[in-house]
Length: 337
Image (cartoon, rainbow, N blue to C red):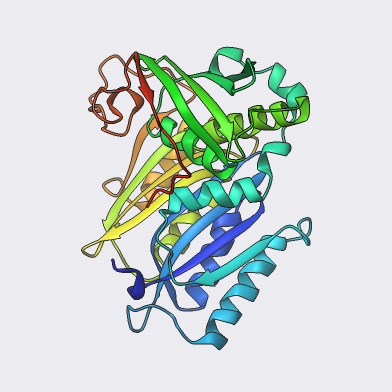
């Protein structure tokens, strides 16, 4: 859909159970139809880029007074009782950057990388978490080495964050070994020409890159909704999730040709797996043919998985160019549309 046919809403606030449901209910009450959206949560923060149209016209919302009302009411929802100073809402025509690119910028500006309970992370499975190291080589470059599980768009997320931090990649090597292990090594300098120069800067780079990798991690049970689109659909679906004590950790919302195709990654309110009986109940409420269980990050992938490799996974990023290969002259501040 062309950018002049919908309005972009950007949201930032403290994550809490039912937040997306409250946001969708407000949009529905204000006569806004969600045509596509991306919602991420990380380190107790939530961010979203939502594209909406006017229910009555199907076009972008341009009336300044109405846009101001939308902004104010959504900001009140985001503030809740605990986020009076940090909740933010903006309403504008969509820019040229993709929703994913903007989400990295929004969460980076929100400093989600600082809200890490490192003590509790030590109790996590160390093999499931990204590992980032930074070393200086002579006086010209800093070398960043990252290891993590492979997943779609991992390299995109890393490069976006380096760009936002104003570092330039001059040389690198990427190595993917199946879906279980992935390693990238970048030789970088700040745009001022200097390598990382202090322990505080080194620690910040590590935190920011770990956050970049974790933001998109598939956490929880993946549910896919495929049905006819209609006004208030997303509000109804998220309300059912909230009433069944589900917490939405990430969501991808899209509509095309009158059809809605949405993906939700959910846990219970404590962050644990959703009980099968609750999943069955939700499927019955929404419709067995409309809502499908796709995958759970709490379970190992089935050996009989039929999911084809995606072109955006690390093993297929730019064909197989980066598999156990090096690249050079990856310079400049990059923006992804």
